[in-house]
Image 1 (cartoon, helix red, strand yellow):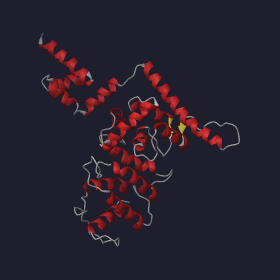
Image 2 (tube, one colour):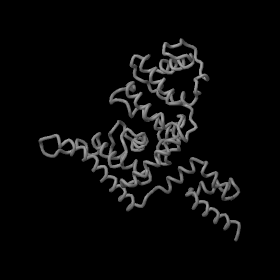
Image 3 (tube, helix red, strand yellow):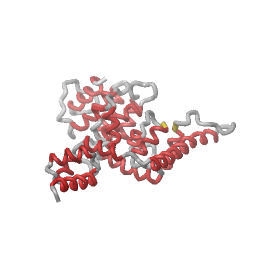
Image 4 (cartoon, helix red, strand yellow):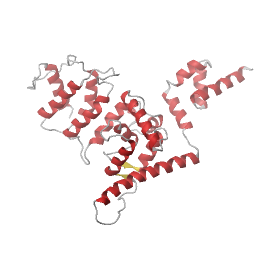
Length: 319
């Protein structure tokens, strides 16, 4: 076999393993002397090559795509209509039509959770809402629902969706990279491009701030912030739990919540405070001794001045 023929055979083998585009396959193989093993390793460390591979291979044939969309639209209509039926039970009038045929409201979202066998208070509902592009709690648009479930392993039946949720839970707990299609979307938007490489947990934590806000509010009400910290922080890679290398504890979270409840006058939580608190959980050690901000010891029943001044720094200087 000629040298050119050998290279062509290696190229075909490499592309069958990776789905790399012809351009990326040639580039990576050439850089690694047409050796399959190091070239394959390089591909899986090359984010752009993976995105290109996904984009080139993700196009479904028209028949399959139409069938997937039909099934997802039917599921969407089922949950959208469930909310209307629920309202009709309390209404003496005849059956009503949904106000917006392309929107699942809170009643429908609860029916969706029931079908998926997941509580709306389960943390996995946050990454699901993120992928389905829900802007507010308990609402889903048709476009976000259909495209989101397509992105999540073409999950076009309830059974598939239940299995996908368990995968999504692990991806959240391990802060796995976003699905390649979502990375490509984020990179294409100047507003989100800089954070496209963050892991799923980090993206969901940031997303939760806007998701949990009351409609029309710029800041997150303290009661909502405390409730969502309770929900989302225990899933953080920085949180101490079985199978996690995190150091931040439930006791530390309780101190933070207590501080905000007692010392801030119920002040709403700013986005900077929300984001920087996650950074704080990554950096702080068990006794808070590696933070030593100048400040006054709070009358908070605490013996460690570092904690009081650290909390003061975060709560008041980030607004």
